[in-house]
Length: 240
Image 1 (tube, rainbow, N blue to C red):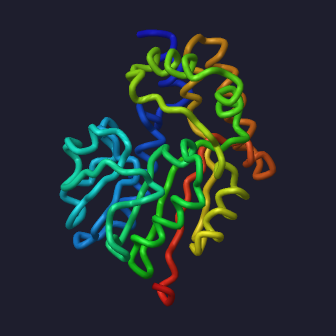
Image 2: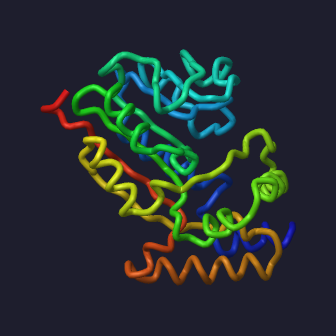
């Protein structure tokens, strides 16, 4: 057993690989119904198993600039498209979700407005994205894209699945403002810190990440420095 695995078992026995995607999956499943028509915004090639909702909804569509979306096995239909111009009619979907996409948006206001357009009245938009005031997005903004590709390669992710980041709706305040400007009701935005994935490189960095995690989870005053934003937005039922 490696030291990293030992520390995983001792410090985070309830965390598994992709714990953040598993958490987000639970949020989505709690909102899905068997007759739901769903859009995965930024579906890509379908490399995140936790975002596979086949059998949980009536129909699952996806859009992404990555042409591999067309062959994404988790989708009933995949289309190559930008989130700022979603190729579906008004009020097409009961639920739209987006996993680690908002941080890449050049114009989040436009994308959020498009999501609202394609949602049915009362429909939900759920997204998970890094919190810009956490240390990892801070490092990401100070380092070149090639470095991000290198780090993700070490973590087992292909370079082609590492995309440039913008962080233009990635604080609680910014996400709330963009959502409200697009006409959404903000149901809730959680700020969450868990196992320090990017620090699981050496024992010293792991322990530093562990101390940080315990610190920011010790008081709500430090919530702005937690790693995740998990948001639930609703299109008003009365304003289709």
